[in-house]
Image 1 (spheres, rainbow, N blue to C red):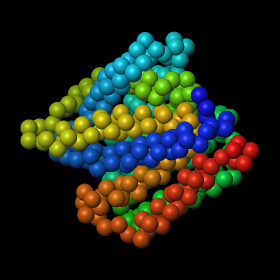
Image 2: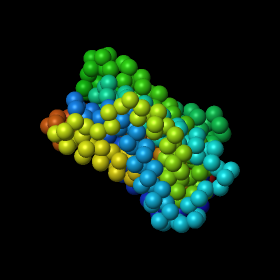
Image 3: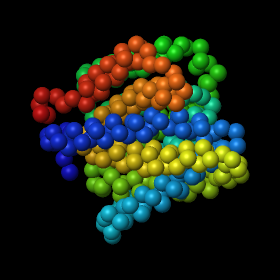
Length: 305
């Protein structure tokens, strides 16, 4: 399967970038729907995590076998890597994120996810997966500047009370970066739905741990919590992971990670729609910086074109 570093045709690369953009829309809306699910009488973070793991594994396994039949079974030698990917990118990742979100705000959640490209590029360079080029470092810094613009536009005073939640989400970002590195070889050997199905399936042992002692259903009269759960399962849990797996087989791990910088912009726009928060000139400046940073990180050097 061609990759971005082996002279892949332009059309698969374009499809990968479109998939990454779609994944960030799904991920960027989690803070809105997650906080609706956490309202009094709704789900707990651990309960929501357990639902996400169980439902995600069931749906993805069904899709994998429907699409690929017996070919959906992974090689035995790859099972340990699938288990590590499932722990880093699914079970622990979702638990830390939802616990952190319940103790923070949507915009803080989106901002903390912007640590993922920094962690990913450092890890990829450390293990020799990618070369640390000046343009990629510049791209991260430019995109990070866009995030800082959004942060300053909303003020720094709101971050203090959310230190614990933000710290949990920073740990989540570190684990997800590890997932991108670990899953890269799997993404090149397996179709996206197969790769994510087994990452989810091998994270199922975490479900009873997460669900133990938790309320797994909302109280009567909280239909919005159920609708939020449905959104989180269908879009961020299933579609976004498939989009990322599809893209990871075609572009660098650092390119996959840099798209995370779109999440603050998506979260801000979603807050405008959901909570009538008006967009600002800072959001426009941030958007320019975000797209410029993505271009710098994802562009191929002349010798690779």
